[in-house]
Length: 336
Image: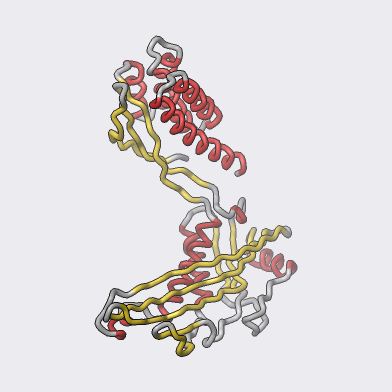
């Protein structure tokens, strides 16, 4: 299914009595990490060991480390996993998404990553009747809080960083492992006192919990197909056939638009020919016929090349970019 709307917005007045109009298309894009492909029931699993309170939290004053802060992060993995679970559930890409909150990790050593065995993972798939597991093995959160003078005033910042380690297990034995790293920076305005600058920043606890949720959201997004907006451009000239096709296109009558534009390609109006071919490519894209869309995009490139003008070369470059998008989309569709 393809969602779009016609903005019918004049973008550019072209030097040959033509105009371009654009509309927005929501493209269904494959997941950045297609590790859960074809998995409709997914269990998220906590396999972490709590991070020690005194690990990774430094405070510096005027560039000199002063002390290590203590932050309780026992709940951080759950914040991460709750957010990932909710994001995946709301995406409507999965029939069922569940979370196993209690850590399956029997170790007490935070510094040594302990992954579940294949037999354990397969047993979880069978017990919870899911096709795949998304397992958080380790979440490391660390930060630096620093303040220092600047031009007779004070400035402070809080930088929070994360590293996470994940396993994706698909029922039957297929296993993938990936890691992530993220950084978020909060900065104060210049202030008259050090304390005024520091008060503008979130607490370390709040900052790290926020970062944990961001990790979960980003991981869920990377594993799930997404709708992404993209712009498409149509040529508009005074040619009656181009006008008729545009009218059909506005009412989503793709076949009628193609039928109106086809005669232009071999017609007497040589300036309308490449524009008609480019418009036909977009109409075929709306129909989901990417092979035909690529074919007519290539025709438009050839026809604009016959102009042997700077404008023609610019349009060739624009349509080559569009053709690359079409080919990438065609490849994604074939891979699904």
